[in-house]
Image (tube, rainbow, N blue to C red; front, top):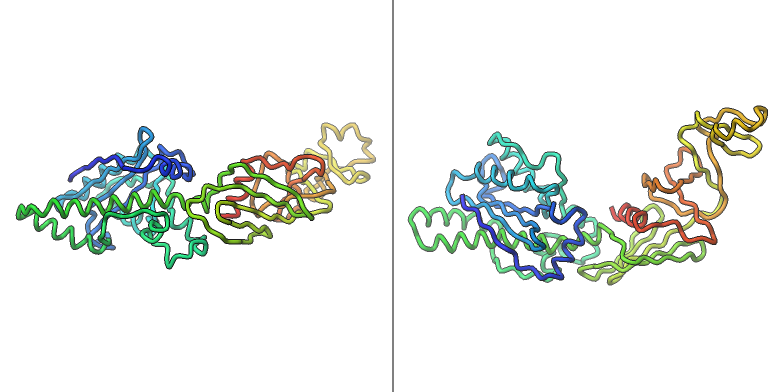
Length: 363
């Protein structure tokens, strides 16, 4: 087995874009890609694993290459040890092939798999839901690389590389000087696959939203939110989810959220600690309710343990939670929650709530 270490030549501004798109700490992300002699782990061999990672504010590449037919177990073991320093594996469509292939290889060699208990971030699976944004014939790695202006030096396909590797082993056995050229072509293919994956990390901008300087305004019971986004490729598209319209246009993201006007209820979960006051139609905590005449109070139930408000409300996506703010509902069992908006006060949206809210829609 040969282990090759390389510093990747990536423009500083591009590197910042890539790192800004990662939903995990940059120094805890391990980008990886594999090369094999076939699709089935039972009847094919793993001959190359490449891993890109951040060190000292730069990207580096480590490659484990099998220059013989007996290095597979050593490569697997070395990659597992190396990747133990990371908490998230990042790949492009690796959930379909790379990860299950490696896991079966770890089992067959009776080795501990490095994927257990760690996050796996498949860029392809996250961005394919937005495929109509890009107007491309498909979402293969090399297609999306071109969209992001990455020019490969490698001219071979994965299928071509199987033949190249077979030829390399033959040339190496006969000590043919062309063996080194073939090896370099195989390493280059893996190198470009990983650099292409780094470029495609920018596509997460369309699936993972980080607020820049959002602004909002109310107009005709609709809340309009706009923000700039560091989009690597200007796109246009409009979507609807849970009654909310959101769109990308050039380098902007915009939302139109219909507001609800009326009376809603905030239900307390620990109803056994509350009294219900029928005359006021509201619940109060027992620490306060004990001072109310017993004739004007009763034990609260789950259905009447609430306080109500009348006004304008901001709808939340289903199963979304902003625990720092009280939620209101039309009924206790309603799946949609709302945030109360006071007419004369700023809208109660922090950047974190807004980011969580939009990411819920994008997901």
